[in-house]
Length: 338
Picture 1 (tube, rainbow, N blue to C red):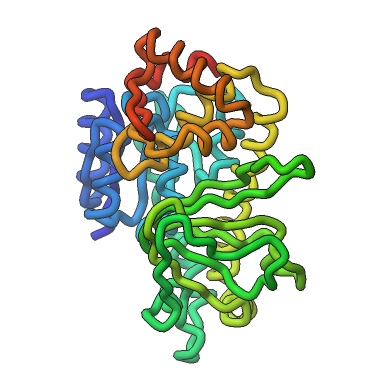
Picture 2: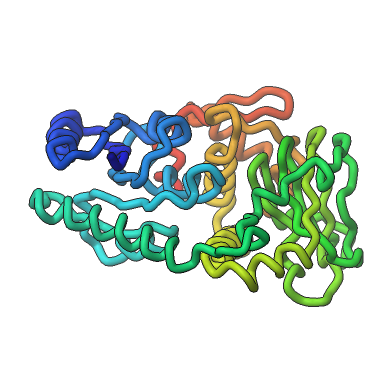
């Protein structure tokens, strides 16, 4: 029996849709918001995820972004069920990696047809690319072995600008930032990564040196995966190649959006956007552990300007602050700043 996870905040829609799916002989788990949905996806491991967009705590776009970064659930087909019909909204969901869109209100046959089609397509694609040689059965996760694991202390540098690019890095534990030093000696953060993220891919497929520095923000366990091993997988397993390229393209897109935001956004807009993005990635809900200097660098503004902006946000009831910690209290109002 195939398993479906339904994430929907409307009680009536959730119950009615779940009943339709159960009558169609699917095993169904439901979640009333994005946060609960993400946790259920990890434990239930469904064959497909159906998700609304407009929800409290974490909206559908946030669920999809987290889903795509969690190795254990990233390959599960993801379908939006939504009343949002604007072309820009549909485009946004597909760009983030959604497999399909079902618009409310929908017919029972339309829903079941979309699910069956997506499940059959996934099964056919996996069977077509299933390798028969045991050597080809390796995936990237099979390379996350103790022999490839290195422990780093907080503030240790993992690689320097100009180092030879030999590895792709995977964070088993901890947090890492990458940065460049500008011509006037200032630090420009190019990325923030946490447990379950890959980094060091910017110069991975070309014979060039690293163009940035990478340093641990906490004590870290980092897997160093040889470039040759990944290229071997890409060449021999088309399914792996597709998923790997999909993951890297999303990471590159996020970095590009971050740099554009730094260049053109207002101070309040840039600060709000950075806080919301970091809150989504935080291991503790809506709590961001980061120094004011690093937060200012990541946002692309002076430290003094950041502190004044955080003070304004605090007085407006959007956040609370303590030493090296910012907690988002009202994410909806922060989003309205964007």
